[in-house]
Image (cartoon, rainbow, N blue to C red; front, side, top):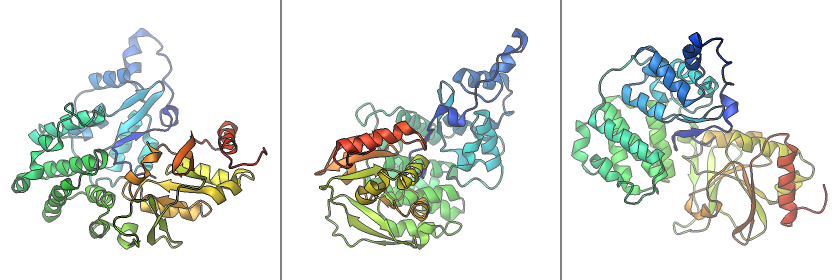
Length: 407
C-alpha cells in the first residue's frame, strides 16, 4: 500500500518470497561459468559474472541508459537466498515488458505487477550517450543518500549538489532528462530529509517546464502530486492530478479540515463510506488503547484475522486504531480499498509525521499499546495463520490490561 517511489528502495518482506532457489550445481567444470551466470541472479557474484560474460547491449539491463543502469545495479541488495531490496526509481523509464525481463533475471518478475508504476508506453532503445554533468551529480547524491549518511558535514547540503534549485533562470536551459532528474532529486530530498518547504518552488518550476514542453512523464507527475500531498498542499496536488489519466481518486476527493492551523495534537484523516471525503480529527492518546502502524498486505492479513478471532476481535473493535502514513506516502486509493474490505478496522492516514513521532520507524504491522500519551509495549509482525504471532499479541494485550485472563 505505501507508495513505493518515496522512499525509492523497495525492501522485500522475505528474501525467499520473491527470489528463486539457487540453481543446482553444475555438471562439470567446463560449464561452471555458464551455471554461475544463469538467471535468476541470486547473489552479487552471479550478477557480476552475468554482466562480464554478456556483450554490451545484449541484456535486459541495457534497456536502461548507462547512468540509470548504474543506479539500478547499485540498488540491488542480496541476502542469503536472493534479492532483499531493489531501487525501483528508474523502472518507469521502461515498458512493463522490459521491466519484467529485467526483474526476471533477479527471480522477481512477479514484482512488476505489484509496483505502483506508470510504465513508458514505448520501448526504450539501448542508450549509449554519456550521462550529463547533472546526472553524474545525481548519481553521486544517490549513493550518499542510499548510504544513509547523517545530515552533518559528511553529507553536503542539497543546494551544493544541485545549485539549480536557487537559480530559476538556469532551469529552462536544462534538457528534459536533467529537468526530470532534478525534480526527482527534490522529491526524494523533501520526503527523506525533513520536508523542507523551500525546495517546493523549484520542483513546481521544473515540472511546469516539462509540462509546457509536453515531455512530462505520467509517473513523474503522479510522484510530484504525492509530494504536494506530503507538503499538505492538497489543492496543488489535485490540480496536478487532473492532468493524469483517469483521473485518479485524488482529483475527486474532498479534504475537510475543521481544526485550527495551530493544532499540535496528533491527528488523522477519516475517510467517509463513499471514499470521496477526508475529514481531519485529533486523537486522544491518554486512554489505554492499541495503535497499529499499518499499510502493507501483512497488515491487511492481520486486520482480517484479528476481526475473525473470538478473543482478539472484540478487543480491537473497542480499543484499536489502524493508522497509515500520510497522504502522499500512502496511496489514497489503497486506503479506500482497505476500508471497503476491512470496515471493522478502518484505515486512518495520519496528517503529519512529527506529532506521531512516538511511533518511531514505521514497521508494518506494529501493534503499540499506548497509555497517557506514551507507548508502554509493542509487538511487530504478522503472518496469517501463525500461532506464535497470535500468542505474542495475546500476551502483549493481557500484560497491559487489555485482555481478561482467558485463552
